[in-house]
Length: 317
Image (cartoon, rainbow, N blue to C red; front, side, top):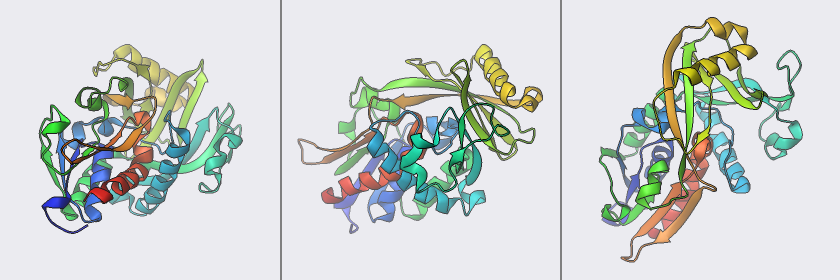
């Protein structure tokens, strides 16, 4: 890509999908602006757990390819955890058998069945990227800035109003109104952040009557979850839900019961039956590339989706 007006790209959406996509485009030579309604720390991405795992995302084949491409990047970023917020951490994916993850076995060394000491149920022991979004999002912003990208806080009421030859739609839940795409829907997730009582490994479990429980250790704190309530728009923490989350997690690690609560978080995952990642020529000759509908797996597939998006943008600039 050569510099100049004809390779201007506006990425609409400033969450992890939008920022990662903008970084890849800017580092390939495009002149990139990100238009975002909210600063990064107030996006859904800021609330994310965020463990690398293709959680409830379709189509499975493409999602797994995006996830593995992203894994390559996260493993490299984990060499500088203090700067990037990415660490490789061991833990158990409960109610998951080794043969269910054959697609990842060649790339995730050491995948094995968990032992009874590690988890009372049947699970998978793995060493995976765990991303601290409070560090990772500012790092993405800094990397974008170094590549010449600019972030502008502005509200977009329609994609047609974006004044660029190439528009990349990374609006997540906002795509429901902006495209419009009624198939995009919220899946509400609630977290409880507590002081870490010494937990060093992560755990995801559905052992408690099919209800989800997970904990992810971050610097000085432990993130407890979670919920996945479809078509629920409220972002207010529910005290009863918070109590249930702590109770389920404490059933797995008793020391969590006495941990001091630091914060409550709620995020709306931008779910869709399948990720929409495709190029759409506009009637006026401009190009629109869609990259949304990642649900709770946005962090997991961000780099793979960004690279594919850049490939779709390239012919247009």
